[in-house]
Structures are given as C-alpha cells and as structure tokens.
Image (cartoon, rainbow, N blue to C red; front, side, top):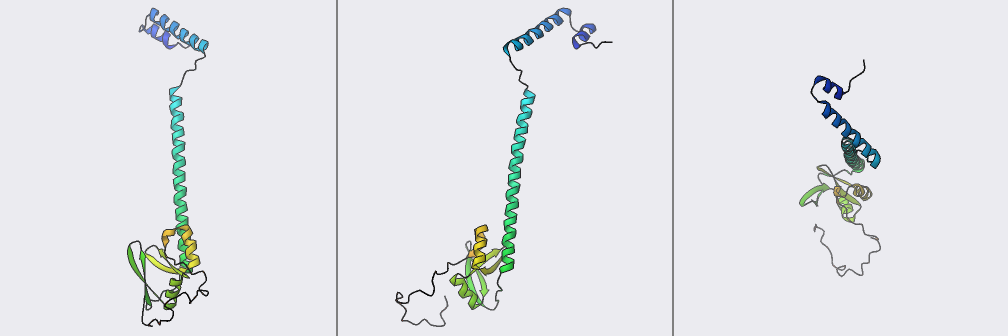
Length: 184
C-alpha cells in the first residue's frame, strides 16, 4: 500500500475540498518555480540562530578560559612570592630596636637588631609583607618580589651608589659631633 500524502489524507477525511487542494498545489508549484528562476535561497532562521548561539557560546568559553588562566597566573605568582620570602627571610630580634615603617596609611613596628636596622636604612635589606606578617629579606630578593608584585614590598631604600666615595668636604656639619644617645 502506497503512503498517502497529507493533502490526500485531508481530502479523504473530508476536511478539505478539491478546489482548495488544487489552489494550494498550484501556489506551491508557482513559488518553487519563482525560487528556481530568481536563484533565491531560502533563509533558514533556525540555522542562523543556531550558528549565532554557537558563536556566542564559543566567545563566552574563550573569555572564561582567559579569566581562569589569569587567576591561575595570579596564584602562581603568589606562590613564588611566598617561596622567596620563606627561603630568604632574616631572623628578627624581639629584644632589638624598633624600626617603624608604613603599610598603606598605618605605621607598623618591627623589632630588629642594630645591624639589621643599619642595613635597612642603607638599602641592603628590605621589609616585605607575607599575608599579615612582615619579614626582612635582602634587597636582591625584594627586587625579585617587586617585579612580581610591587604591593608586597613595603620598605626598600635605595642604596647609595658609592658610599665610600662620598665626600666629607661637602658636608657643612662635618666638624660637629653627633651625640651617641641620639636616635632618629
């Protein structure tokens, strides 16, 4: 038994008259001839919407992957900084001199030996932040940390280029003695 088309089924059921079926058939044939004659391609809206949705999803995924990569890079940099500080931190002296420095707009205090204080002032040592703790490291390590995250380095004084070649002749107060008990 041959399959009946929808049009033939509707005619058999009596839902459509013969005249309406013939006009629908001729209309359909005319539209197909016009399409072939004018080389008009029928635009498939569903296909367009699917392609657009796919392109938007690809862009969204690319942005998400880029964001994840940036977060992974930040974590890696934080781990590198932590490792540098942990490996190169100098022991602090709780009975030593207080060294005051600023962290943002707050003044903080760190107790260090006199030699460490002198090296901090001369730029040989630096103070860095590790979470909520403050550590003293060498200036070379502080420069490496500063390359990764400048906000972690709190105190890094510039060392004088030639401390030994500083001329005393230029100092107008060279003849005056500085009292030993004077602390800056």
